[in-house]
Length: 122
Image 1: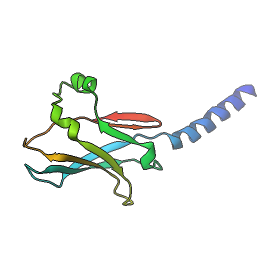
Image 2: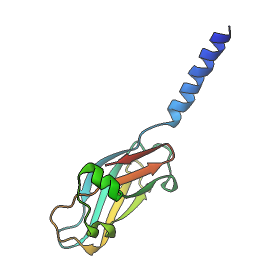
Image 3: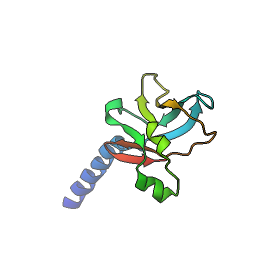
């Protein structure tokens, strides 16, 4: 009898927790600016669920993250700004902008997304 109650409690806990835990994902990057203009881009957010803008912290990966990924982190990347935009239902995005024009045709950077139950680095 005790094992039956324990199994029922574990199953119920699994159902409750599985509805609360999910993995936020990142989709494609859409570039809205041209070379020699300030960066204006959007990164699609996937599986946001019921999270709000205040529950997600988005930014440039740390120097350690760049080192671990084997990606150079030039100083110019510190000008990048990241903002979560959930205002369009069905199309949540991260807005990536810069104040200064980008002079390089290709830019590699790591985006870090933190939320209460997880972290994503891409």
